[in-house]
Image (cartoon, rainbow, N blue to C red; front, side, top):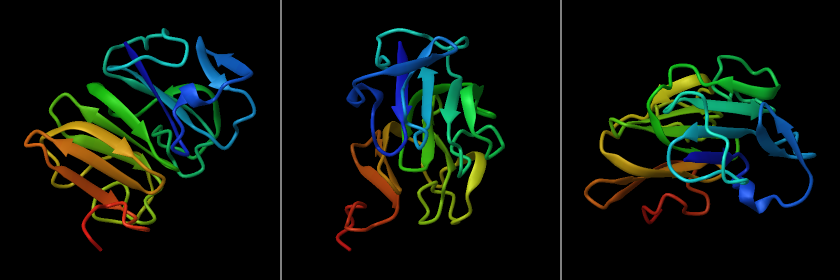
Length: 173
């Protein structure tokens, strides 16, 4: 099945109304501030179909101002481009200006804006290609908020990183 993730914390299914089709994939019309990504992994996209050419790859398109398409640039893309270095994704998630992929080895890679550390690489440097999240080697699911990201681990615990305003990281601070 195909999974679609949309930036700004909005899944595609929440965007009813006119759409445009690029390379066989539906994008909500009039959403220039939104980036969309899809992978041949879990779930389905807004129209229930449209697999990517190769299972495990990720393709993204949209504004790309922070490098959140993962193609090594900050160039706006109207058609899908492959995310550099991702060939074994099982799940994707998109935050406000960043995107992350869960890989088959249970590690997580993220790219895009990193102002408060939502990429999890120990820096606040924006990344135009995927970087490995530090200290995550056993994730089963991932989710992203506007400026934070969380992973459910195999032991049932949750780890979060990035912005903690107002308390999204769940660490009591």
